[in-house]
Image (tube, rainbow, N blue to C red; front, side):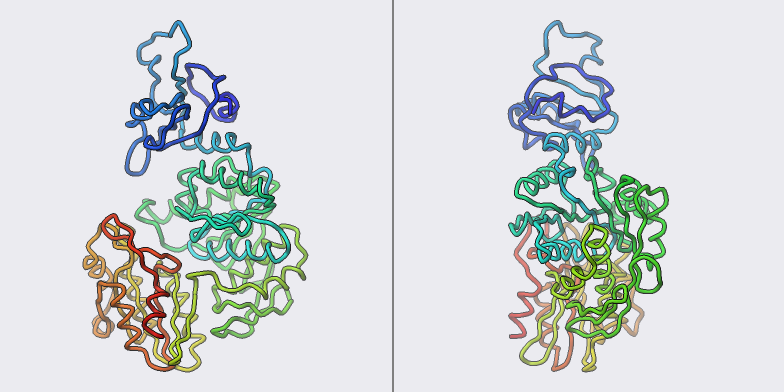
Length: 490
């Protein structure tokens, strides 16, 4: 695409060079630059892309977009001929990257009904179920989630909860070209703060809840909250904003939001309302806007997720009766309260819960459906090089909701796993610490839980969910919680 078309939406402070050249790709990692590429220098969390401009030029970049002074500005000289390199100075290179990525791929979000789902918990479940629901309703749709990317039914690996702008727009273009009419995307707080979703046209946004998370990245909870709110502040007037009014920060998301304001709730009237009738391990009987439906997901938090799916689908224009019928056909999402019942009567549950609130929700659900009265055995850890402040709370919640607790490794990354467990143990009073085991090896911890469990007992393995690798000292080794459970309970 011609450069002048790519940059038509960005705010430019200064520019030198040829704007009528063809650009082969937009890149912000200097190691991936090829001849004819446009390189965007971004000030990152760990490094500054401006330090790698020379490397990008050596690799063949023909255009540099940056926030620093251009060579001509530094020397005060203007070249007599067209320079071989075009330089563009902007105030915010992240914003410029997002807008240029959208233009480069022909603004694909304008050709889809794009819905973003944000919140601490429930994003993956809601986005995945919306994709499945639209398939049942006969529509082709796309999905950008923590688990994977789906273009119709074609699966691609996911690299981040919300990818970078170049990848997002490239995938959206593939979705449009393959006939997708809808796309459902998880929007993380990192993505909003880093403007990964800038330049996208959203049909709607959904807010699930917000509790402590990602405070290794955000300076405090207020900054984390404002990142989520920033997504709703950016929605256009012709979009909808659907928020969980049971969360005290739901109304906060709607402040300064120009979109049509909608709510869903399991506790109050107004907006889309739901009521739980019966809870079982196999699923939940509930009323949604007065219509009775059986959903194949257990727990109050999943009832809330289903209500959000229903509300979103109705706001997208589908008939409520059609949506209710489709809801009853939806099943669990991988790694989200995924269950396995052994021949010996032990029930094992794998869940992605990696925050105190998510862990509390899962354990409450297990207690509610544990009608056989068996022991609850929890295996849980905490991720390395992440928010250390939540570790004691996670251990305290896990111990309080279980008869036996095994603390183990999650993804230790570059941290000492023993130090992570030390942090978790600080949350345990003496009586709970006495019945807590520390087993650093995650496979051995899961095996121990399986050996402990008797008929009617329930095992929760929390933290990694759908993940099939474990990150240790910069390496990702194959690891699947459910696979280990099945091997040890068969």
